[in-house]
Every structure is written in structure tokens, then in C-alpha cells.
Length: 108
Image (cartoon, rainbow, N blue to C red; front, side, top):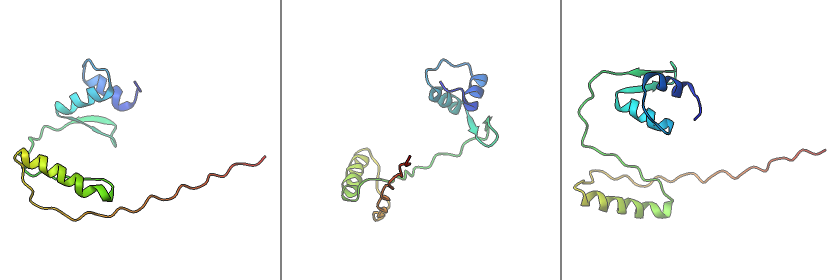
């Protein structure tokens, strides 16, 4: 594993058997710790969390010709599990990808 500051400090805080960095980070997050990248340290926030909202916001990213189909499929499954649709926005059109530039080859 890469010995980043984040990982080294996580190992100092928590003796936790793990195979990946993500496992120890997840455990720290579960225990109320979060990584502050500006201060380069793990901080603990003891502020009690607000009650979770019942609202779930979902954005579907898909090809234009598939977005309606993907959204409808998601909605069918969500409604089958007791959720209901409150608001639906029209699809946003994405910009086409920029063409790849030809890389110049040095001449000798």
C-alpha cells in the first residue's frame, strides 16, 4: 500500500486489521473521524448528526438515447420498494466530447 500521509496517520490512530487503505478509512469514518486534506490530519467531529431527511435525490447519467429508459427503470424499482417520485426534471444535454488532439512527434 502507498504510504501516504493520510494512510500513515490513519494507522497511528487506529489499530485495525485491513487489506486495503479504503477499509481503514471506512472504519475511521464509521467511528466519527474524517480526513481534513488542508490540515493533513484526521479530525473527529463529536457534533450529533441531524436527523436524516426522507428525501433521496438521484441523478441519472447516461447517453441521451438511454437516459429516459434508465430513469424509468430506476423509478419502477424505487416505487416497488415504497418510494415515490416528487419531482422530475427534463434531461440536460451534455456537450459532445472534445476531439483528441494530434500529438506532435519530434523530428530528429
